[in-house]
Image 1 (cartoon, rainbow, N blue to C red):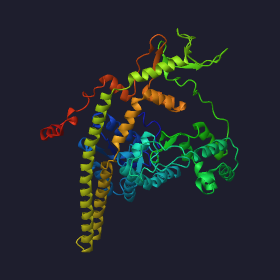
Image 2: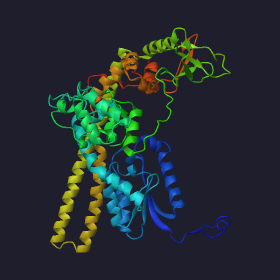
Image 3: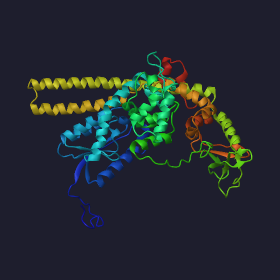
Image 4: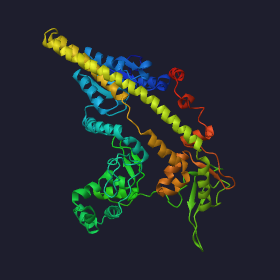
Length: 540
């Protein structure tokens, strides 16, 4: 609460409920240290404190060498500051929770320690706190902690993250798709689950008809699918519980061609054959919630997939499409709608422009030489980074073991009355903070094993056959495909056809290098690793 006119008079006003706190900032790369990321965090944290009546007692800043390594010296100092000043620090302010912990287990470990010191954690950008909504948010995070750990273990063993990012469902496929039993054969999953010849059309029909509101209950839908042959195909009766799982949000999205990352919630376009469209999946959700209504108009038109990708080369406006009727039936054309453009009213045959588009994709496809260098450079970089993570992890594990042993020794000294009860309590609290900080460092050092070879093979096959990929994918996915290759659109002229456009990152590298990546790749990555060469590389 401020005094009237105090700010205008130049006096600093102090509210009656002024709290005291500390700020912790950290960056995770050299580029951020050299740039403005750390300063920006600091400024925003100070502004947050000012806006929320928090007096800043001290700033703890991880920078310089700390940002280049996994050591968390300042985090440990900040926690120790809160312990030594128990009762004098009210809040611990961070820009984002992941500045000090990158998984929920570490987050709640630090949160508990701070609460023991009477300190409340505040995030400038995330809703964590003590009101009901904020508690719910944290409870949801805590619920995912165990699941997060399980997923990480699976990814380390079979490269699930790689498959997920490729659009391949890494687990046993849902009902309607065939399980190829890769794991039993000791193989890695390299392609999407194929449809089950019998079950796929049954589930597909059930989803489509449920979305139309033809089945008021899941029991009736279960009976209908058994009549269509599901019971015979599975060897057992279909239950309402099974139907309920099929109609669940995640499975419905999968059936619509979307895979949900269970960690981030991100939607990834799957490579498997979808049963239903995204509109039908949306309609199913409405029917389940009792809010079924007409779907909103979608501007996507499968007859004109290049809309909002191809631009008029003269006015830089998106081309649109139309389908006039003639004596021979319907005719599809693209054209410019800008009345001020000289190309206005001049139609371009759908067949001509889409054929030219396929040819243009072939022109920007990288050469075999590019793919060879690309593969070697990526694998080399991955292996080099992986070594440093492994060494850091081993160092952290040794440090954690030593700290745990120290904790046991302190307990023995307390039992032997070498330490008084209060002295032992203080010493154990200090060691607990060291253990927590080391565990967080270890979490960041443990790099997930990534099946980089399989990912590169898939990427190469995709990039090599752009024209075929454009033909094969679902028409509804073509705009996304086009956005990936031409992020800002592609100019078209009736005279010279397609012009120069900004390309997606991988195609841009190929275009600039002419297929030769030697200028961006350390040649030592492809030479025999002699002792002299090893020394030269280690000093780079």
